[in-house]
Length: 375
Ligand SMILES: NC(=O)c1ccc[n+]([C@@H]2O[C@H](COP(=O)([O-])OP(=O)(O)OC[C@H]3O[C@@H](n4cnc5c(N)ncnc54)[C@H](O)[C@@H]3O)[C@@H](O)[C@H]2O)c1
Image 1 (cartoon, rainbow, N blue to C red):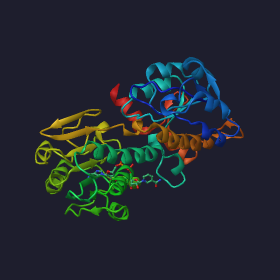
Image 2 (cartoon, rainbow, N blue to C red):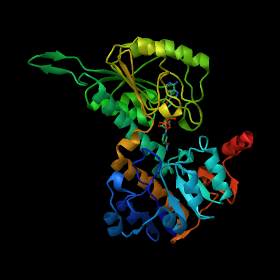
Image 3 (spheres, rainbow, N blue to C red):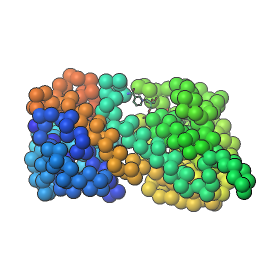
Image 4 (cartoon, rainbow, N blue to C red):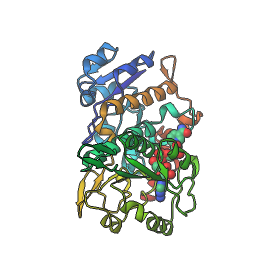
């Protein structure tokens, strides 16, 4: 079985799907790497070769030789065109956002697995790329905030006087939020956090933050996720959270509901009530943003408050983001391979749930319904 690792070509992507140290975990699999694929993440061709990979000069060669292609970003239409008919693809596919790509993958009879669809079960944890990349993004969000804030995070007692600690509010205490809390705490900020899931309370406390008790009912969905919230709930939530936002130096937002637009937690009026110099880092920027003013990939100054639309912070730390992602990839590939041969068991829960297209059809029901609706 040949596993191909192309160079990512979507703008701003610095990660690579496999790193040299993971090759040892892929016994019996022949690894092909496109020349320069790991350069931006600081994994070089010579290191891949020393670990047993073959370097191929072009994307065309790589795509046409691989039985399975492992990628980070959803393929572009050109990349889909280079995949061999009947080959397999493992990547973030964001199927709801890239319906045309899914249709093209089905037409090309590609067996495509989406990391967003890997179930959140204990057996699937080593393959949970959403979590590994959210860990990076959460850590990075606290550092971005500390870097942009014109204040210290920790309490400082100096000969020149005492400086109070920064006040940081984290909204959404899932994987990214908990990591942001832990990092902001390590830097010495006073951190409070809020989540609509009741289980988040103990987790928030365990990483050293205060949980905000709001008189709002929990919004628990399936599989440990939050459920979609009504506009009325969001309006009440904004009202209750407003004074906490206004009193914060830093607000880090990570709130998401899978497959939906991110809930708006910080309105324009709430930003206007914050002190000049305050910083908002919005990790939900890609799915619409938790702040009404967020623009993904941009930093904008609104009356002295900086709103950072940070939808892809994992790409800003590509070495370790790629290392963790590569572990997710090698774990998933190991599930598909038996004695060096590609032999997916489609009755396996992880394989079945992650599968988007197979044998010319769209297997993932919500994506198939969305495609039918579009036609
Ligand atoms: N293998 C596993 O068992 C596994 C793996 C990863 C995550 N999880 C769990 O899944 C859950 C969600 O993880 P995630 O980080 O991917 O979630 P996510 O990225 O979908 O959402 C981030 C957080 O936003 C919260 N949220 C949604 N709407 C909100 C609102 N209006 N206000 C405040 N918060 C809001 C969610 O409850 C969630 O905690 C967590 O409980 C996590 O521990 C389990």
